[in-house]
Amino acid sequence: MKQRERRLILNYECLQTMPTGMREVRVWWDPDLANWLVGKRVDLSEVENGADLVEPQVMEMIDHPNVVKVRSVATVAGYQAPMRVVEVLMPYYEEGSVTDALEAGKCFTPSQALRIIRAALQGLAEMHERHGILHRDVKSPNLFLTGDAQTVKLGDLGLAGKMDGDGRTPGVNAPQLYSPPELLANDGLTRASDLYSLGVVLLELLRGKFDYDSYSRTDTVDALTKGESPLRKEDLVLPVWVCRSLRKVVQKAMDPEPARRFQKAREMSDQLAKIKIADWRETGTDTWEAPFLRDARMRIRVTAKPARGGGLTLITHKRKTLSWRRTETDVTVTDLRDQQALAVFEKANSLAVS
Image 1 (cartoon, rainbow, N blue to C red):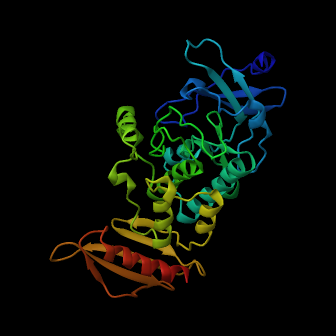
Image 2: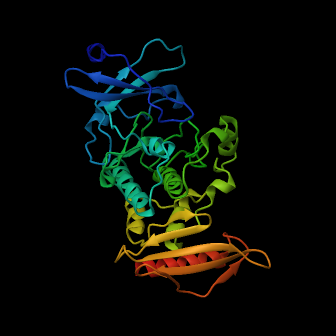
Image 3: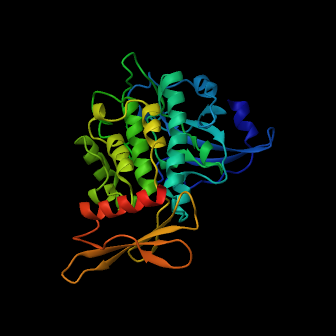
């Protein structure tokens, strides 16, 4: 490992992939291979006893298009006990992580979100079923963009744990917004725990980035200690245009009870593959549009306008050429969380994807 460290001779710079700054991340230049590497430092003392940690050679064995290839794992000296810090060296992806993209103001379309999550599920299936490993740290900063949504890569295996005969590993002392409610419980983590965290990533891709700075570590730990999601209720709300079938997938993935969630990555991926949703986006104040799947020149639009007696009137238009025409009866609702509002968008989505 010392020889490896001597080869990383250039000054490093920090990558802002975790807005809370919980982990040290560096970019290294490897002059022998003539490429950039990312070094992510992980404190192994976050794991209760470390017995379930995945050995570096096993990390290096994992070779899958949707899992970041671990090049090397080096011990880092200079940290006071009980800290045990290692640096996991991985390829550098210029586009960064999903979090990097969200922080830069990128908005993912529903179809992009589904492709990203299905790619990550392929990576989790490889880890879970072929190698018997739980990731234990699935989150938006650990999903790396390669320029191709089909080959989004799940990275940072520093806290990955080996499953026992019952498919469990101990929890890790690394609470964050994407953590499953059972993180700090004594029962340990399962495949469903990783899938919960990926469900949170899907939620974020659909609704936009969470306000990371508004969440304190204390509040996060308090919620997880109670066996609850660290996310506030308002951050759990999906956009009004999310279709019923996709809502069900998010709700099942993020069910507080692990036994009611998806139990395997393939099961969740298969459900996502069946979903047809138009690429909705907000085009103005309380106005949403989407192209038709069969003909992008055709569009559907829903506008919410204040109603005379209070509430909102939802107006649906369709455009075939240059002009918009009302295509459904106007519907008045109390607010956008009203079941009738969801029904309006469900019908509009069906028109767009039929």
